[in-house]
Length: 332
Image (tube, rainbow, N blue to C red; front, side, top):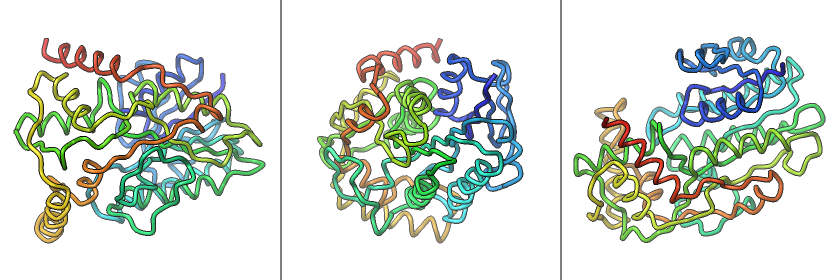
């Protein structure tokens, strides 16, 4: 049976990709820092290690035909060195493993934030350039890693980068829990009036895009050496998205707001305070986060549809219904 490696297989997206691969008949190996008994119970060969450890990555990759490089250090706060080690050194180690064992396909999970310079993006496509300056080490190191992956595309290794935007759904351990937790404490506010259109992607659609890439990626394929935005293709006002998420958790809608300029200034101030006095603690707001919440950012996914055969099968309405159902199940 053919074996595929999923780095970060224990994460929210990683588990969804693993599940789809198992359904498709692949022998799946996961590489993560922690142990995941639920993956082991489903027959996944779980390997533990750090992406910055070359030999650990190579040991996990040996015998595999394809690598899904999903693992990364995400977030809006932290030391640059930690992001660089996980996202850049880790990606170089994955590329080294591909070369060492003759692995012919690499599907890299990137982020639309690699092209977000702080201004609004409305209907942006893959021609958007990388910005000259980044507000956070996460998008900066992800952009560096994405460029490494795409540059490695050639006769012996076919690569593609997927940029899923704001992944959410049941079992989310990042976006939805943070929004809901802040709403519960009354600390969640809109940046601006909340009318800015934002794209998101439901978890099943994001995972399916990775399987689409697996099916289409070959030497000379239209997608080889390219990056693609992955969304639900249904941009909505951010106020609606946030309130549908908190509403699914049974909370009242968020109505309070702060102007963009105030949010950015507060973010910069909090960043300075935290760097000086609490570097290990994430600020309530950062400049990067303020711009993410306060500007429009939605994308044209026609390239993914054309080259990957991607189609968002689960609508936002269906996704919100499933999220509400999941929250109800958590209470029972």
